[in-house]
Length: 284
Image (cartoon, rainbow, N blue to C red; front, top):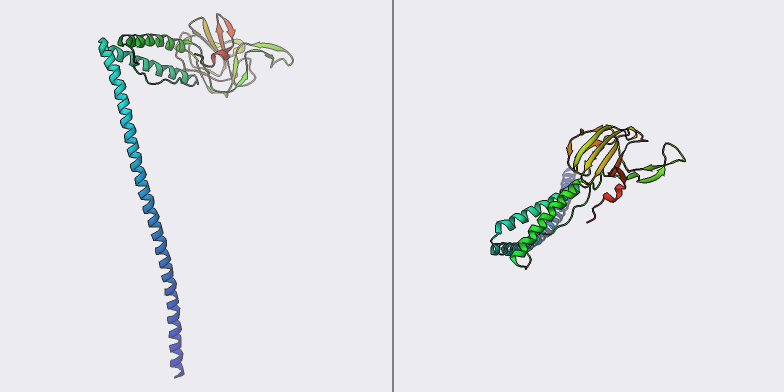
């Protein structure tokens, strides 16, 4: 009889333990369900907000595109109408195409020299007489022809983008402490092998060893201008070769009379050195 009572008590304790675990499990499941419901509600709200924002953005983009298309169409219609009045629609379009091409070329030349490009607005026909409009485009196109040519052949900008180590003019002689000397160019900091670019289109008139300049390149440009590039570790061009602004003509070195790797850059007019600093930026 005693043994039977003990077995019943044991079963009761086992059942009580299991019930407690079940209750804990219920609480956990309920908590998880609440968290899931909260997350789902938040996701639904966020999704609804995102859809509304997307719809609003699409509506605004559509309005902007419609306005832009209307403006473009109005400008195009005005341009063609004025050109047609003079009977020279194709000529006006040709002028405009040439002008835009030249403006892009100017910015390419600036970029190759390490200079910031010029900002140009889209060309639009003004409310003037058709004849004067076409003449204006023609005159502007002719002016840009000269400007592109001048920018291409005028030494301008940087043969390499780096800081300066020495400037044009009198300085202390690095090989004779206490003495002075005239420095006919600007020195650019660099490491051996860094690329050196020509700052203007022209013809190579010298490429070789030149005393204290070490490996040197001289390029002749219009208006009796020359650019000199000294102390090079490598020369990539030959005498008589035509070069275009931005071409890599050599590499930085420390040949000749040099205390370390750098680029010596000179501009000479009528054979005399002038300060390259005045040619480093575009003043128009």
